Amino acid sequence: MGTHRSAFLLALLLVSFAARAQVMTYVYHAPESSLDVRYLYHWEILRTALERTTPKWGAYRMVPSGFMTERRQAFELKNATGKLTVMYLSTTPDFEQHLIPIRIPVDKNLGGYCVFLIRRDDRQRFANVRTIDDLRRFTYGLGLGWIDVDILKANGFRVVTGSSYDGLFEMVVNRRFDVFLRAATEVLDEYGKRKESLPLAIEDSIILYYPLPMYFWFPKTNEGRRLAARAEEGMRMMIADGTYDRIFDMYQRQKIERLRLKERRIFRITNPLLGPETPFGDKRLWFDPQTWK
Image 1 (cartoon, rainbow, N blue to C red):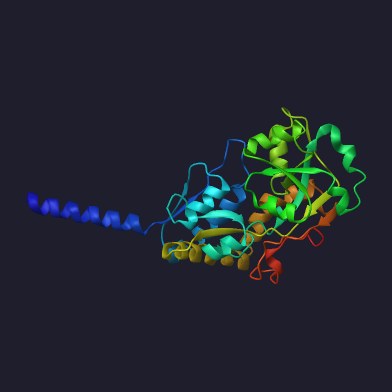
Image 2: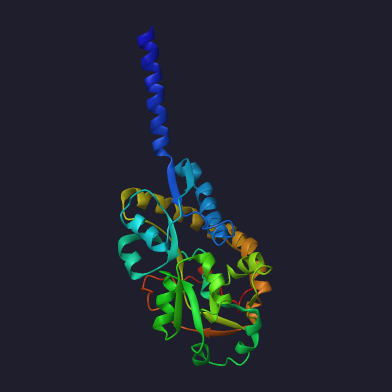
């Protein structure tokens, strides 16, 4: 009797382990602080895509990782350590070669429309900007290792880097640089959480634009390909039936309208890191303030 019971329990245990092994696990980068709400929308897109594909692909888990810089995230994915299994970052030639992308700009490239977070008493300095060369007179703050650093430098802009996301807000206040360059997706939340404690302002007339498709990336392994295939299938289902647009609208419409993106002057620069794989041909994937309704 005892032998049969032990064998039965062992069989149950093996079934349990097998079931757990089949759960597709997406380990993603957690927020950097309690004030960091930059990626709520992006992980909502992924979560919805995984929900939509559950009938076909089965159970999934989304598990937050410990803090990692962007360079560390890329290292963990390239080496398939399992400490991270999905990353949200802009495309680069290096990533295209060594990782698996889903070539759908997750935020429809709204993040490529950058506005200026500046010191409150500096507003007038930007009123007379008329050309790209006028913009090159200012210094721009960005995080160490951020892809935008290379894009701005390639276009002749002066960049100052900081190693801490939260510290960059202090750096602009302390005149280490003139502009903390922020994506339209991020700046309102960031400003709202800090406007009482720091003398900051959002400049209200300029957009610095560059194409910056931000993709979900996965390790170049069989499991990485499976994770990517499932997520892409779900995202394309969402695009086809309008779910993607509804989530984008829910998270981003208020930002687009409050920042008055349609009324601002747009200064365009190039992104030399883009490859021919960039899906510019599919207009559904790209936000444009001029055609926004």
